[in-house]
Length: 350
Image (cartoon, rainbow, N blue to C red; front, top):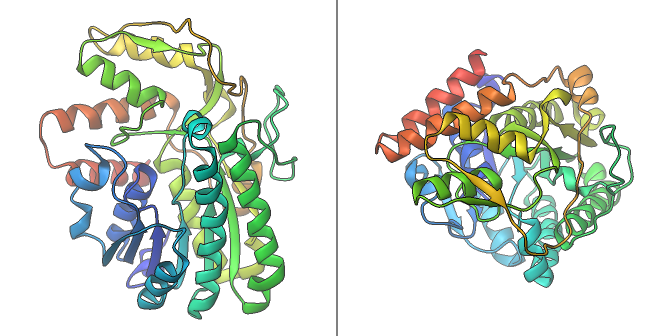
């Protein structure tokens, strides 16, 4: 990532009040970009956006729904962005069973609205569309999924993200390529890091249980996921955005940004590691029936490594250490913007 590239470059970022969106907004602001956020209000209390005082670091912050195309298009016209990074989503598998219609509307129609507003803006050069590793039709294979594997999804969340991938490809082929706008879709693993307070995510649930002195109940201890620190895929997204602007159509396709294969671990490994590090931590198996979730999922990032020069920098152990370090700093009431920037700098220096 080149600071010269990002300095004073206008970026519109949807989902800037979320966990991943907050981290990339902070990183972009450190690089000197003019960040224009568009998102619903922060989804939890507390949240990364508030505790890092991101409101003071972005150029503008529009609290609105991506399903509102006129408002989104107006915000895009005001921002006049060179780059669009689309992160706004309903991002939870289990929640998608309860809010299936909203999940499809936000993740599919919301994505279409972002692409439509971007092509109307007339200043956009590149779009990075963030989906998920769960957009693949999961066959419970032992080997990792590649970008050309079949899309699908058992649950509404995974299916909605596969649909968003198909819609993005249609916009690329029908409108964006001809307009000189280069669109890439990116798929990351299970991201962890400080500042995530979402419900039904393993690390936030674990830290929450410790803070209130409860035993964490685990649904699927044998489920294997591609765990990675949040800064890992974000670095890939930023590298890719640069190449979309400088090299164009050659990079306008799908990309995986996952951890090394050895860091795809079962849930039980994560909680046992945390139990060894954190006093009073304990867990037990959840006995009640649960909605379907994939049992085995890995990503093949060979394409990003060979063509972008991207590679994971932090091991899973380091990622967990940094997550716990951030959470402890928050409990000690330190400046969380400073703590987060220090972690970004440590990542860049790795």
